[in-house]
View 1 (tube, rainbow, N blue to C red):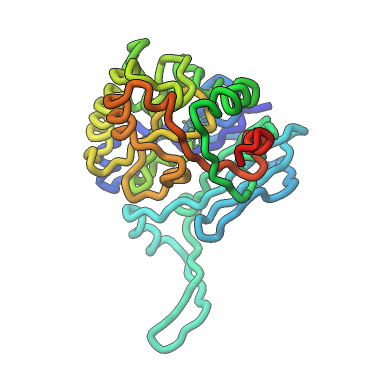
View 2 (view 1 turned 90 degrees about the vertical axis):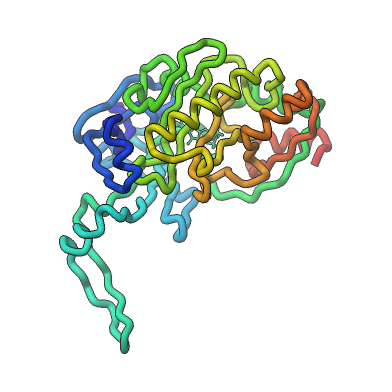
Length: 337
Ligand code: M7G
């Protein structure tokens, strides 16, 4: 099957500071290989073939009128797939063109009030599209609308319930290795420290279309391959964490003109992908998973490890699990919920 990724990305490094000043211009596109786990390879074509023209919808997993998103399960050439559609924000730098180049249809007029439907030029009316193909049952579960329950995990619970489960049941991190090995998304890298111990790659999260800094979202992926999550961190990892914190903030300031005081820098527990990575988002942007029940500020993580080298090995950690998450069943079976 053709590379299913159809994202619009690819920004020339030297134009990004201007982007921060709301002059957004996209010079190219890349497929990035981000769509299929286990697939390597780079895109980089000016225009992708429409891999979605044969997509057959099975059901809608989740949608939100407010977020203007829809998560759809279906089949692409007989393979299970999940497609995520998201209307993109309106950008200030496109307003002049939006007003002059659109057609307006009047819906109603009453006194000083009138409402219209504005038909914008197609390039100002994009839908960010993410394709996961082949998608596993776990992907379907991840994107399905579900009730969550808060779980209390002691250090012992982690050893006896969580660890055995995640050793068997996690998403592939092939996409992470592709990034670290420059087999995918190499042209999107914002900063890299190649050191095998304290080094990392900083690049845009695939949830961010890079068109505006208001919803800035980058991830720092560590070069070390044996740190699964927050639970594995000890004071030995302080140089790594401090390096990510310091250099990640510097790189974002340089590239996007956004100071550290405007950033939310955190780790998820539980993460979806068990290879240590840190989320960098713009403060004020309500990124999925930035709530207190899942996000752990990197600054706090560093301080906690400074005061207790085994803090994350021993502490009880709280996190939400969705109703259909297999790990939740394990906690129930163990009588921990
Ligand atoms: P997480 O905390 O493991 O899980 O974060 P979450 O997805 O439940 O938040 C992994 C982060 O990596 C998320 O923010 C994803 O959007 C992002 N991500 C996932 N994939 C498969 C890719 C990818 O292929 N490329 C990039 N650039 N980001 C990805």
